[in-house]
Length: 192
Image (cartoon, rainbow, N blue to C red; front, top):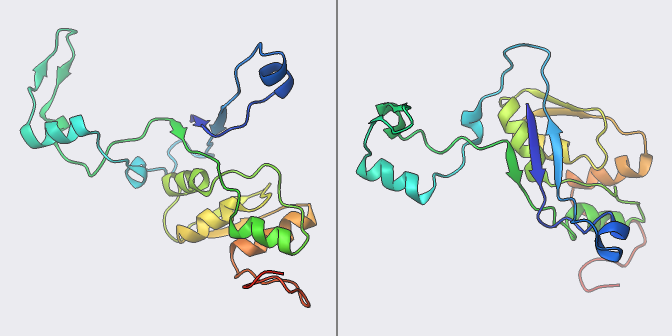
């Protein structure tokens, strides 16, 4: 299924066309696809329900008029059942504003180059929850800073990640272990 990730905090780019020549608006939506080798994957949208809107909460409380609509569509009584939340759309609005995470601080302290294209844990967590169950294995063949591994860990899934750039692998360790300055460093509480 094709999803669209909207990052309201995305920087104006491409800079030449957006901020200098001013002939384009900023790109803030990225496509995301999830694929399955099976025709009926384990995906379950009940694991990613979102809170009902105020209007839906009011309908659940007060009831609604089931039956035919002017368009001819018939609304059944099933829509009045509280399912614990609404099914989310395939348009995900998740800001990517992380600038001072444990991962980034640890990379700075340890002189490691952080991955330049990190995505928010919430994005990886959405797909981890949608597509897998507790105890399943999540595999990320291009892990970068390993946001997927962190999301899988928080969702109680097993995970494997693969990354060819050693700095990114080293930095990703700080997603799972306490921040420790390098030996001999004076960085920590109280400053340098």
